[in-house]
Image 1 (tube, helix red, strand yellow):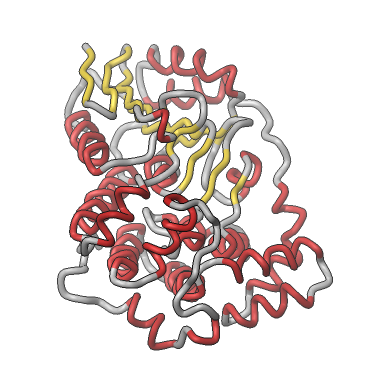
Image 2: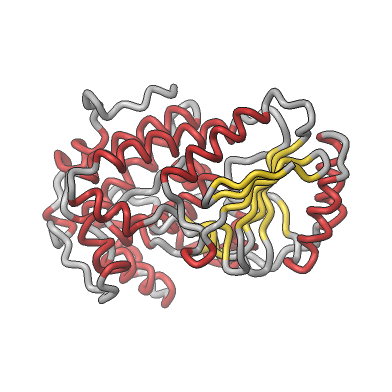
Length: 351
């Protein structure tokens, strides 16, 4: 049995339900229709006895998913953002479903896996990276704040690694993705087809785990593990300004580079991100974090930096965003609080 829903391919392969994100020319970036199709499929499979596990992959050889379709988000945000609010609402509900999925959910994070792609994969039960994996939550680069449950993953990463990744928008290779809790297994890309064949023959959850284990190999080293010293010391500061000061004064070349990355991102976004991550550490569940992220994302839609950030990175590609406010000192506590405060109409209500 096989059906195709425009940009998502759905099929049953043996006992495995296959979901293939199918926009390879756009790095499988997500449209609202793709989100609703995946959600409806997973919901149907929960009671379908023929489906023993679900497997997510991306079409093409460049990546699983580069995140949301930023051009569409940009245009909708300029028009008021109603469509993007609906997109976020359905996307975050899908993230919650994946995290609580009652059957094995296997995500193959081969190639580029960023933003919304992380949301579709890193909350799953079985998360696989390859030597080609590039995993990131790069939202502060476009004037947004890590979402799709990513702020919880970043908050729970060892030490202050998640803070570093969030404020700089830096990417992780496979070793760092494993270290930071975004993935569980390393499988060389050449072995993925054989793994998918083995999963199709798996009679149940234990066999899924065994099939993955049989194809797993030792992962490459984690670069961030060697940098924990200065990262933990610098990013433990209470404010972004102090973090930047510590980075610049650490005497470590990589720390100075990190400071420059932070300073190049949206001042509002990095300040809200720090506050959101610190709060995410104390929230009791992924659902509670998704509720917070929805407030923050809706607030970002009413600001200037999101549209400007996407313009600079994706539309005009001049890589020269003109943030407003332009400096960290110009973003006050009240500005940050506005993003995190409950607002009628901007409540997801998952927790």
